[in-house]
Length: 443
Image 1: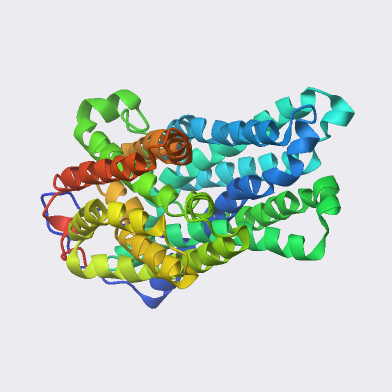
Image 2 (image 1 turned 120 degrees about the horizontal axis):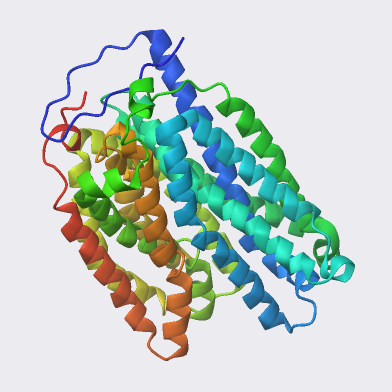
């Protein structure tokens, strides 16, 4: 049975009630799961690189000292972020002109190729300078894939989600995004318990990339079963996937999405990927303790997404975003200031969990809020490009800015930097429509 696309209501009209058959509900829920599975694989593969870098850095940058090795691998990691805007544009255009399914299938194939390439790469000792060059190419492929994944998946899930439960079902995009990060951590921890350090550095680091490539094949098979949610008329429109049409007719929506994504990405990376380093470098905790705290926090954060998504179905997406902006603006400085001097791991867990609960007002519905602002012919392009640009600039640089300010003796300036971006997100969220899907009448 083919799924007919759910028409997202215009911002000035009420949504008509929709009745679904049990078969239609089952088909839509399966589509959410299939789309989400690819999202999990994409983010698992992307984060595995960061967690394994300490083991494979000498294999690709052998002539440098350990610090330079890590800086080089971090630079290659950053390349992945720089490729995201290109991926957002490319896959957004493919999704709007060729279909959401086509875009998601190509995206997961590229991620599989990038991971398999890293898993099989010869080292510097074997092929010399070509080793780091090919590593950069592999990361560019992965960055391109991840850049295209967010917008297309967000668009697809918003179009296939059951009316009246869009917030709940769309929240699974971040459930799987966080799940991919958690799975990457757990795989590396399992390898650390199974292999000794020499084995991990020699060949063990390749295993997570092989796992990522294998799971990408499973996700590919699932995505091939998806039904298309865009229609032929939309895909054949002269405005479909057009940058000029996007900025000619939907410039305000694009910059609104850019505005709250900047704050959302920055606070997300502050309290997820950077927080472990913050607990070690600033609070003085051991790496093992910090890792345990963050694993627990990320698991709780993942579980909170459907809760906050369902909340948005009751109070409205706009209210969720306003609560995110208000609480984020008020809480960042106090939470980071207290965490800087925390020695009790349970208090640290509670504070980080509180911060991530605030972030959940945004992450649980971020995809659908953005998708609801664009018409179908430029929806994937508008969501994907705005997200990728803001994420590359503000999310990708979060750790660098934090460490730079700390090295200059102005660590607290980073707290105010995050707060300022949260204030911008709050102001931008005030521009969200008060009617239609942003209130409680989308069911």
